[in-house]
Length: 489
Image (cartoon, rainbow, N blue to C red):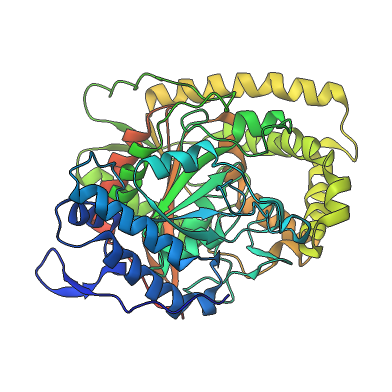
């Protein structure tokens, strides 16, 4: 994409007194610096625009950027600060929005050529929350068509690359978000997750990604005059990607506004009390679906060791409830999505159609070529039982450490290479599907770099207990360090 030339970024003192580009700063430090007058929002936005102009042509992470609009928002943020107005938690901080989220004045393209002119009249609730929190909305992040794959490419906007290795996926469906954050274009990016679309991209690019509890963040996914499917209403969530745990925590403080537009929003959900005594942690190495690669297993040991060092009691456990929930996702979500296949066949791209073909081929091993209504209804009944069972386990182990994926970030288009490769990809991603079915919060946290690719673990916790995840992630991050932003390789 091409954007208008902007002024180069201004240097500003970092926490240590050194000077560095503002695009490298965390959102937490930027918010504090803007609020206290260390730098202006305009300087921050100029710096990020300069970084976008430098690296986005190589990565194609942001597919629409309007520099004048972003600078205007920054100037307004600076004016309000100078006037002494109350400032939100993200005041003046750059944030990107995914192409499947409504942002007033922008097309919600879904990565589909037929939707290139589908301009939204108003923000989705979560985008409105970011705006009210003072965020400067910097650009639109890429996604696969209909947010359907773990590989971010589509016929309208093209392919997004992973800044660590162009031959590997940046994850999906929030791959544009993860690539933009990892490469320093923005400190925070919005994503959404019904099958791993926040956690997988964060893992693939070495950043932090949180999938909140279902109902925790008000949202819309379809236009208000379109009926959202039951799986979308009960499993889809909006969550942030960022380069630090503190920045994810900061963003979550902004995503708590009520909206009548979300039928599944849970206003005023009570925080879960912290257990008395040392927290017990369940370490799950293998869900019983796909054995983890050696690099993945080593990351689990690394994270478990860090937690033990500060007093967590870590015990290796099995979690067969997730293996069952993983297969259930392919009944509940994929059978609902089958109703949309006529539209997909009409306007979807080749990659999406091929991925769907492979998804259904593998799912048929469990549910048959054409699952019955009785199977579908019984599946939702079973879902409730599995939610209760996982909740009971989490009473004993309020925190569970498990793989994000059983493999390192996939080679590009692995899902459409063959049905057998898709079978392996789906098995590796078992937790990506299982957790949304049950509605619990989970997050991806980086632990290091192995063979030139980022590694990390997933944290799973009790419903509406994101704080326990964030606290544990802070411990892991403090020992592992951070590995982004980085220049594209």
